[in-house]
Image (cartoon, rainbow over all chains, first blue to last red; front, side):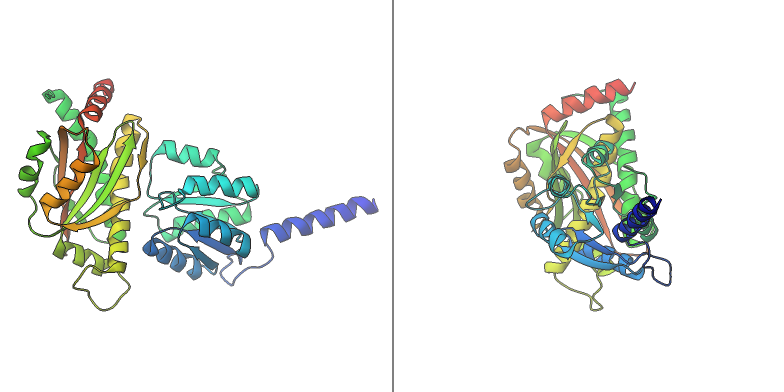
Length: 154
Length: 200
């Protein structure tokens, strides 16, 4: 009985730590770090404004290679990733991130609205797919859903 | 190359939906209503393209190109006259001072806007016809019309004839107006017509 209780407590602590569920802002948003990988300064600026207004901290990368480095140095809770970028395309960044860290939580944020591309991204391990232009509500809903474990796009 | 009236009607309808989605995207980005004219479709020898397009645009242009490959390949363009490009940038920039030349940050803003609009258009097109299209990184070009057109020909040597789709748009209450243009080569045109025929 003692071991069962200990196991349950440890499992709870581990899960809580993983999802950062105990730290919330006044508005109820989970305090979490979001990495934006997008070669457009406009897109990064728009996403940063949306995420910071909701209480999240934000890290930016302007290409895939830099994004992968920041993923490991800054340990973000969620990655928002563009697809069409100079250098390494977003789909390749997604596959590399998932290869190196299966628990990486990546949301594609792309202007590509093709259903075939969305399917490919989800099959490659993306948690969700946002098409540009998005509303702040759409972005927050997806990020919040992933952090709280209520997103079921994948 | 000839397409019959039924095929032209079907292509127009698909293009209408695709350009409508693109206009909707522009409206969301600018927060303003976007007025869109009915797209015009023509099939022309490549040598007549400059003449055909000069009917619509004159002087220095800002063009955002999105070259695409896949089931069909070609070049999609957002064409803005210089003043419209400046106005569009000023609508979206966080800078308080209005700019008078297209600078580094303005290039970034306009390229991203072009990326979103052209993807909306081509993506809808692709979804409706069950194509798979791969997009290159969009690029912005500042040039006169004939220089811009030469860059299309050089980039895609298979083009002899091209389907040109033009749709004029205007952001209501602003001096922003422009054209969306898709240029497809002959091989892609055949694929497109086959797919259109399958729609019934």
